[in-house]
Amino acid sequence: MKCAKVIATCLKRSRVVEKTGLVGDPLGFFHHSQNFITLEKMKNLFNFIIDLENKSDPGCEMDLIIVNNDVGDYEGNKFLENFNNQKIFNGKIRYLCRENSGASFGAYNEAYKTFKNEYDYFLFCEDDISIYKKNYYTKGISYFENNKDCGFVAYIHSTRLSKPTRKRLNIIKEDIASCHGAIGMSSVEVLNKIVDTNGNLPFNNVIGDNHRDNIDNGEIGFPLKIIRKGLKILDFPRDVLIAEPAYDLMRNITVRKFPTFFERIVYNIKSNTHNFFSKNDKLLK
Image (cartoon, rainbow, N blue to C red; front, side, top):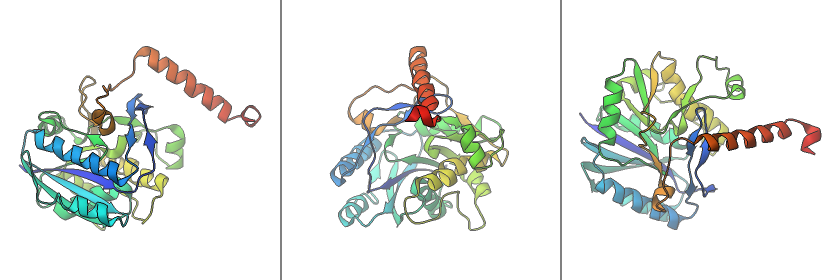
């Protein structure tokens, strides 16, 4: 059995989130922190990633595939390219550079299309999420193989889609599950079932950064297509934290998966207050 872990990256970033926050349904600490807006910070991130991979035992033979959505940063591209063919704990690093389309989900597709004949499983991850604890890959395979009709194991968590999102995408109520960042693992056998006529996994195949289309066609579209094949998205048990924000880990900040009762109450008060004012023009003024 051969396994691959795909890390999607892009060297042009603008978002800064200093504190991991609550999001999703079920509500959890899934809006992960991030601050990698300079090349120097991206280099620090990848040095951290590779160091973690050298220390981490996935429990099986595993190669790390870095897929770079190219934004024309020559220095950054060369920095990432230098990792190609380096050995890690139980495998090696492979590097791909592609056009900048479809965000992380375009990168996932690139890795799958390039290497689908070489691996049995793919674990998809973004560069600012760390998956590193002992046997993290074989645990996912075990959940996958021991649960009937499982098509995808979510490494952060699945989430229901909001009613406005379902209405905008014409998604019926039964098709309400997605998962944060489409971060998780699946088998090549399942992935082969959900490709389009061009052999692609779902992603927004348009060059540029159209955030909503990237989410609709990738983060939602990818797991949704698995569900529509009659398969299930499976979550790890509530007490298993298997994916952590890299920025928190780099700062030695303790991460939790779900909020306390009090945190949930505070969140709901803030959310309902915001929704009440934002939907009333007079109050908004």
